[in-house]
Image (cartoon, rainbow, N blue to C red; front, side, top):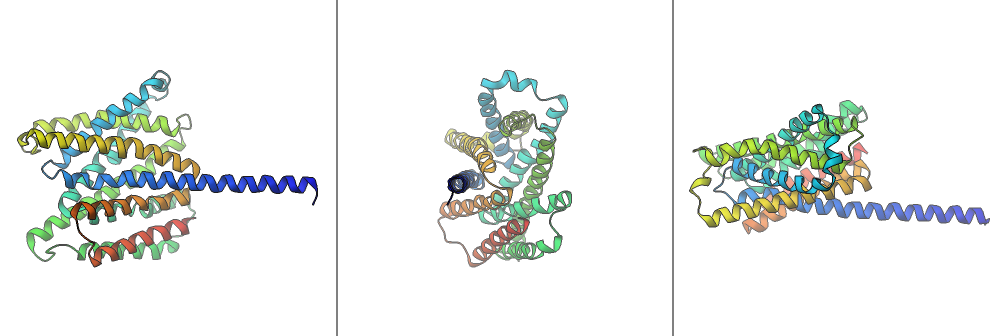
Length: 326
């Protein structure tokens, strides 16, 4: 073998080794992000005496404060970048992507439980692919038929697993919880597609800068929620809670704001930089997997047969959709 050939082979080997290492590191970041995001489905279950409005307001006020603190070292340069139009976009994106999304998740979990809500929200990779398919024009709808059928079958299993599905009170509450989960899925699908589209047209922002600005915008919006959540009678049961319940409330919400919003988002951005879109899309499934595990541990029970069937159908459907998208 010639010297040049040996050199080329060595470079190729190093290149493949670096790509493999990047992929493994990226997968590690993605799994860690999923582990942190899964917590948001258990938090409302831990605080049943507080309304979804109070939970959403507290989480995002704290997220806004943390984002502002993290942005302080670069604030002078960062502040000059966004135009008035960018701030309007940040507020409009933060409303469905954060505030309304978590309102729906919290309300859904308190009515239907962790497993059904996390499984329905776990359809995100499929809905985002569907929403973006027309724009990209890269995926014929017939190739999504089987994954979508699997997803629909999974949702049917979730509904059939309803406690007292045929009794009025239990069935109605559970069904409202499922509708709220569907609302969360819709909110985040709109956010993911619109946010990606807006960022593509604004290359002057890094993903970290945009993430910090989103946190600040969300914090501003959540201040408007805080007034009815904590001070209007009838909107929340917060005022009647003892000091110990308040301590738990702020502790859990700080954990969610720091863990899921700040660290989870940072890990996800790091994973997205190291992985192709098709692979990172599949990793969103880990949010659902961890949410289910946390939920079953918190409820101290094994999953029902229909829950297992729903999980297998949904996770398999999402994975197949991501692979076919690739």
